[in-house]
Image 1 (cartoon, rainbow, N blue to C red):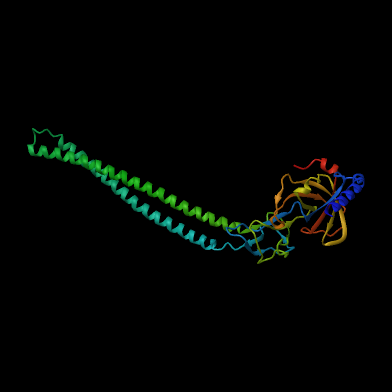
Image 2: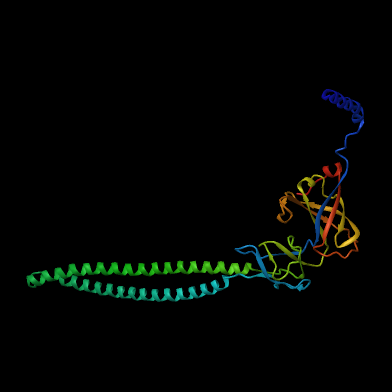
Length: 337
């Protein structure tokens, strides 16, 4: 029974073989449509980033008002620097106290140095007198006086050497304390500079003028606002300046092969249903970049130019669906560096 079933299956396969042989193989070079995702952006916009911090995520304590006109120097975003503010004030007090203490100690050492200089002068005078007394011929004075003069000369010489060593030690102490004080102040100043840098990094100010607009959080779907939490260094918005808009899309590594600079694409905007615009790829990134909010894949940055006469009410941050028809022509086109 089993052998009969195997015979029937083999016969059916032999009967279908001519039909399978006549079916054409799919054309690997046939055009196909690749759909990638992006958003409208202003090429000349100033990107607003979540300030850097020693801990992440951070909470946005201040954001410029959405759609507000911002002038150079105005704050765009700020986070709480935490204990760094109190640390900054404490370091300023420590530096002032250290300078006062060092100045006091240097003044005391300077007094000791002056005393050592005066003692050295007295020792030099005593040595000069002892040399005069010792130079008196022994024939003109008593023997005991001559021996006393020689002893005084030896004592004056030793006293002069001792006072010279004390003066050298006093000067060395002044120089060492001045060097140690400078090192102590430099250490405190370095800590203060670091604290001030952390405080400065907790805020981003506008370099130029423009209109502040903020992105949507990729995880929560909510627009960034005061009180929102995000990772340090995350792009949270941009300062839009007058100028042309464009589209920045992201293509997965497998989709990159069919894209080329100059290739026409079709743009559809999620906020404007039923309408589309033609576009053209102007640049493609040379290396893929990770986008953690989209998963573990790596994406090539694709910049797309909009037509000059479009009439759609586009705004930076709008989601865009980009459809590109790929084929042999696109594969052989020159890519951007």
